[in-house]
Image (cartoon, rainbow, N blue to C red; front, side, top):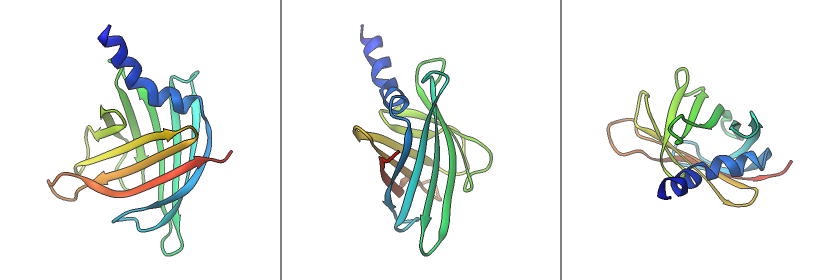
Length: 149
């Protein structure tokens, strides 16, 4: 019985995003990024077995500062994974969910994680954490966006 509860809890984020596709817009800020405007397009694919996130961050001072295409899906073992490609990372980096909404980089040039939550219906938070040395990652940018379309 406990295993089924864990699997349901693990896939809850995937199910919630798959049931709420659309364009999410809002603001973000962070140590590395500074203030920015965020746009994340959420698309449900393969009948909700995966979702794609197309994320852009723009600021007046830096212009287009982040472009990302990510796939969120469950692995064969039932754990959520993010497969991320963006301008800041080489190729595709796999992030595995360590605890609810906290995804650690499986491989990568520096310690990194992504923290993604849905604190309310139609609201998504998406934060990038990393460290340029072996220190524990810390939040560098975080967007809070709301579904607008």
